[in-house]
Amino acid sequence: MLQDIFDIIIKHKDGFLKGLLVTFEICLIVWIIGLLLGTAIGYFISKNKVINRTVRVLSFVLSGIPVLVFLFWLHYPAQSFLDISVNPFYTAVFMLSLLNIIAVSEIVSNGVKNLPNQFLEVAKVCGINRKTTFFKIQLPLIARHIVPSLLTAQVNSLHLSLFASLISVEEIFRVSQRIISIEYKPVEIYTALGIFFLIVSLPVNGFAIYLKQKFGRRLDEK
Amino acid sequence: MIRANNIYKQIGNATILKNISLEINKGEVSVLFGPSGSGKTSLCRNLALLDYPDKGEINILGNAYSFPANGKFKNLPYPKIGFVYQQLFLWPHLTNKQNILLALGKNAESRQEQFEELVELLEIKEIIERYPNEVSIGQKQRVAIARALILNPDFIFLDEITSALDIVQTKKIISLVETLRNKGVGVLIVTHNLEMFRKVADDMIFLNKGEVMEKGNDIFQNPKSKELKNFLG
Image 1 (cartoon, rainbow over the protein chains, first blue to last red):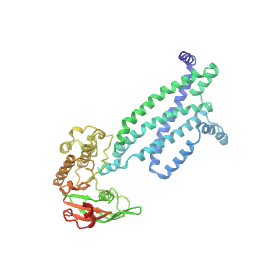
Image 2: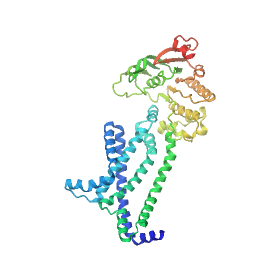
Image 3: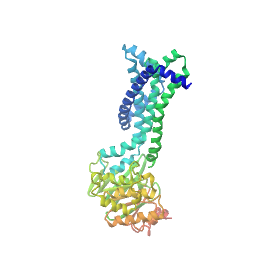
Image 4: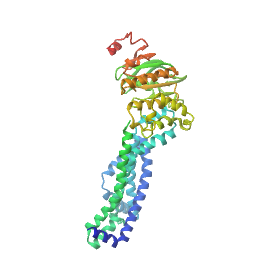
């Protein structure tokens, strides 16, 4: 079977490569938007109870809707209702970014809220100014606590990018489906796809576990 | 001097501190004791302005702070007051040395001599480059004290810091407290370990249900209130 997988990859290498590039392009944009906006929103909502509650309700509602359905709504009925036509690539990026922003903001907001206030109070008593407190104490402590979860959320975004195929985005899953319709070898092709996701996900997940073990212990030590 | 005048603190329906007036002087050791839940830590935090009383006035080194407070105070007394917590709260991502020196910022180099003196005095040389989670609780406590002392405070508050220490380590802390007193630092100790600390106390404050029941350096020998008699057994 390995030989078959290898043969198919070689035969359709251009298609696979194109699909891979689209997948990476989606992910890169979704990761950057999600991490930047999600971090800013997460930090802001941790300080504001009203916005915090609003985002939590939004997150709760959205998490109850399957991604597939949400994407379908955005691509067909929403665009028809608004009488617009958006490139499916951007629709997918918009939806996945929105989900990533929500995930990241929740992680960041929890990280800020879970940091024992006394770490900052000690800084105040020591006469340390706000800037130093933020950069030398608050930020590193929060980062160590949330980076593993952020990495896991980004891997999740990569997996969710498969759903873009539903609205005809030519990403790796869509390309694979097309190759299956030519070669009639779904097991081999889906296995190749699985291996690809493993190769990308495993190091990131492994790194997340490493960070959790290394720094989780230090932050727990109060 | 730190002087509290008629301070009150309420949390929900419970009155935590009732009409408390007291003084803590530089170069003296004051020991604050009382049953669990009597408001010792609350009083300590209020005196250090980490929490604000609902009513009353606190005067710290000539600055008066009246309550209820209108907004935030601009001239808070830090780092003239040092505070060492029961749970210590050393910054876990920094080494013990970085924990001690962070507050000095760019002045850290010029204060190297004082840093080394403190390290010697507190016997933390061996562990100075390690992280807090890599050392014992007694060593952590000494690092936390060093972090407060490097800033040359006029007063230092020690909140139950010997609760997890054995006799030998507690004796070391008592010896340090005496050294601080001799240097003119005012020390307020919150403790359950009365036997050990009463020997160094210049003043003892017995707190019960948020009220100062008795105060003075002879209250141990001549308890007047029923509450203190019961507490001492």
